[in-house]
Image 1 (tube, rainbow, N blue to C red):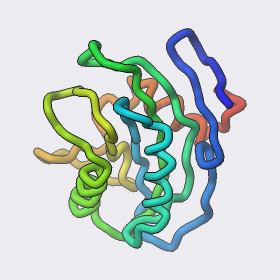
Image 2 (tube, rainbow, N blue to C red):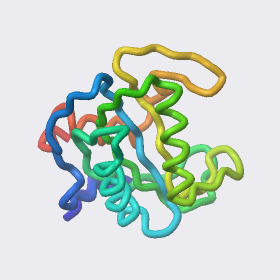
Image 3 (cartoon, one colour):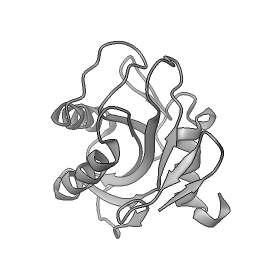
Image 4 (cartoon, rainbow, N blue to C red):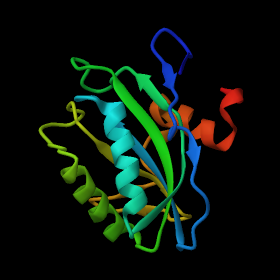
Length: 164
């Protein structure tokens, strides 16, 4: 099922997007931005969720619908699919980031240039109540509130889909 929000924005729904997966006893709550535009991205998101639910490092708690939206930055590429996941983990921010980078690599992420097409992009939007600014990690994610690709899926989790 899908819902057209505008000529450029479409929400896609499936069995796992949106979904609530239950609570967790892990220490930190993390909001992840998930995106991609190479290959069968929506199928990859389903496989990613299966992988994450088996991952002992994190517990998926909730997912948003998947938003199809135009690229930004480098515009000469296919539209992106984006969603937001809420997960819990016991890892601190820097080890958690390294874990996400390993997951991206497992799902064939290649880094060629800024805003390049990609199979999978995992971004830490929020990490509990942390505010971090290092060479490798900025939390909250810079300009997250300006990106429809984050704001719309996140609002689906926090406010409910009917309010979008």
